[in-house]
Image 1 (tube, rainbow, N blue to C red):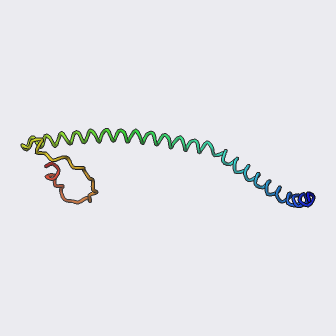
Image 2: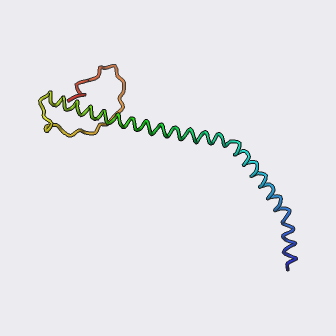
Image 3: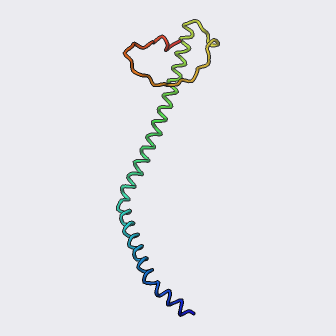
Length: 116
């Protein structure tokens, strides 16, 4: 009984060893190639982290500038309201601004629509 199993295992062993050796050789080759490219991967990761940091800084600056612009626009609206004789209580709440793309035309822009 044991002898039969050992004979069968012995017959499969040369084929298994060849498969094992191929796999080990392929792994070694692929691992060596990967290790050769590690500096590039590290540089790519560092560049990504720098880009994300700068992106966050830019976003923060833009948010602060947007807040300043909104404050300035509120002051302008108040000044226009005072100049036109309207009081703050007459003023409607500010609506959200939507930006739509415009097509360039040869006509002069209508500035009368900019301020109420």
